[in-house]
Image 1 (cartoon, rainbow, N blue to C red):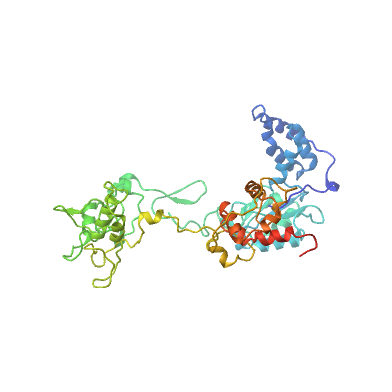
Image 2 (image 1 turned 90 degrees about the vertical axis):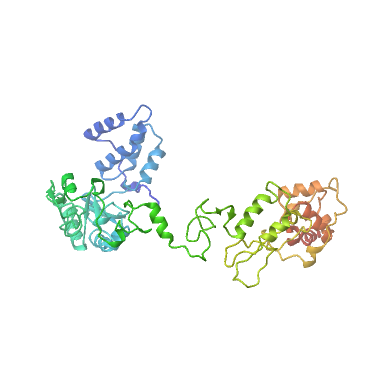
Length: 483
């Protein structure tokens, strides 16, 4: 939003007061609000002040603030926020607001702006030589179907051309604005289509007050005579094969009198002797409705992989028995989808049927997932911390951490400002002090193994090595002027 400021003091009037008619209107407007809520009348009063003087002056803002017992800054906030309030003098006969939003722009609003520049002033919010005209570009004025359009005070002028707007501006400049037709400037009724209505033009018609014929709905008796249910009167009659209710297919018309069970059975098609049970049906990974056709004569008709998955869920480490070996469960799930005869990794006699969809996840046993002793501490390749320091030596990742020697219970003299080391903040400095680290010389004398111990103890994930704390501490501990 652009910055909106009050006009210069040179054009501001010395004072403001509502005239007799507007003063009585203001009192009635304020009285509409409950006790203690009279400040809600600030926007109506600002609008009436603008209609009286043509724009909102500084004196009017002060007057309304006093009248509503509001802080001056609150009234100023309202006046400068809403673009409907003009904060500078506008033309006494016409202030042209040109809509420049996309629909109007596509329909020629740029030409309308050029007309205003040539007829009024090159820049917005400037008066013409006689002070009777001004203009500005605004956002959508709410009549996009009649684009392009302008608004002059409270009236809109739509379906404009550059020539027509030029004529309108000249008429206002001559003081003949009251005689200019408002609304569409072409042969169009309000926002109706060009050339008149193009739909609902057949059947019974009736004329309304605007003189335009509108189609009327037929009576219930007429619909009954045509054999059409009253509830279906609004349904379009396309007469297309795709909407024929007699077609029993997944594409049957919605609401048609089709037995859903017959439609479902016919949509499955004939079952081949070689097709697996449940093929062509929907629902789940077993290609069949849940619970339907899964077992016959006590036999599980699903694929062996699906049965194995159920067994794993029932007898696995979290199942009821809890005695089955996890590695066997994993082996049962290491099937792959491959043509018959190709190499497949199987376990025992649990090979899946050719081409069946199976689980190919290869998960380690639970005990292996729980082991963490093989996870080394220190820098890792996927560390998410960012550092602009050069990487630590490769050997730093493999050293055995060693607790630093010479940790202190109290600083020897004044403690150094460890926050001067890159990567050390106030919280980390306190933690280092608690470990007995107070001086740069302590860190400068550490080995890589000792720094690794500190990094592990602080759970710093290799940051201390990557930021080269030892090198930084040596530079900070060196006497001034010595490299």
